[in-house]
Image (cartoon, rainbow, N blue to C red; front, side, top):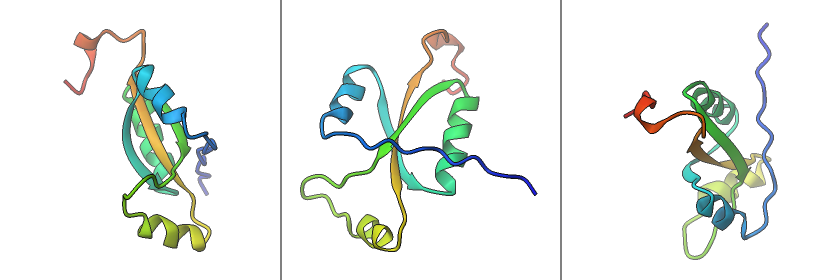
Amino acid sequence: MVQKRVIPIRTAGAGREAELLAQGWTRQTTIGEPRLSEVVETYRSLGYDVEVIEHRSVGDACGVCFEAGAAQGAVYGDIYLRKKSDTPPSEDPLF
């Protein structure tokens, strides 16, 4: 039986998203396990730095799906990406 690695989700303060964006990170998606771990590992294998923080619904955005999942024990993470600093943009396999 193959054990899957579970990606830890960091609890982040309200300003963490702004910090990540200012440092060149891009918010890619919001997802829960088991797909969260799979997506993170795929991005890492493609040469990206990946950070996952706890998803928080903000403002008037609909969060019904996330709230329903949380009521059943699901935890969702926001995936942030940036190109690794040692990978020149011209060598990026996605572009």
